[in-house]
Image 1 (cartoon, one colour):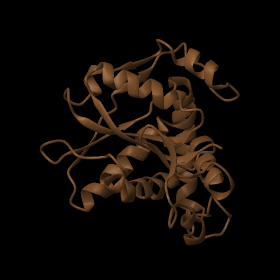
Image 2: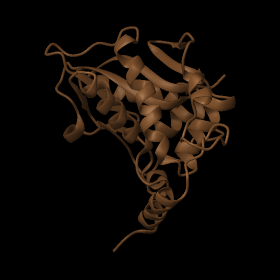
Image 3: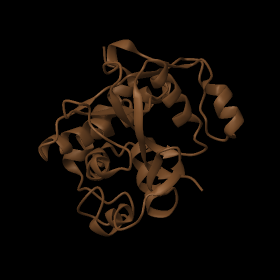
Image 4: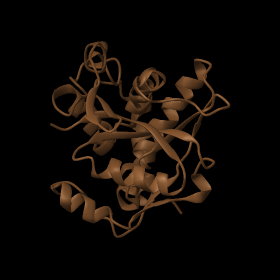
Length: 224
């Protein structure tokens, strides 16, 4: 039996077959993200947040519209261009490195299960998979490790300040052994938006508790 979320996902996929793509950033027909809007990710320094955390753009304007369209408005056709943007940066990210065998490991920040159902799946995991596919096409060995899980008690973090976000995640973000890389592996943690840094901090702590090293953090956008 197909769930309501599954029906919505199938419906969106069917529409994509018959409706021409329009840019989620500006509405220009022709592609999910037109060249002019894609330029928001290029030609600028990383937005550094400290502690090895970097983002490609500030969370406003075109970048915000693209992330929201992908995350909240069913524009899963943006997964490929956004994932490829991340792929172009990961190998050059300060501190990031592959393991001793030359394998790059990507760990996506987790989504709440209820949110993932509404969105048609864990959206950062899909970005990580698209990122990995592009890196592999460029000849870089890469693996995606869905190593983190959010317990059901975590609530939507929208509107919460940093202290509330930390409390919301305390004891609810865990390492999932079946999806984790081997102990001692350096990984790049991926996310869509860094707001207060609470999620990144909780993810990093959970990975380190499992002897997994976070060599760098990369997000599409950063608030502020």
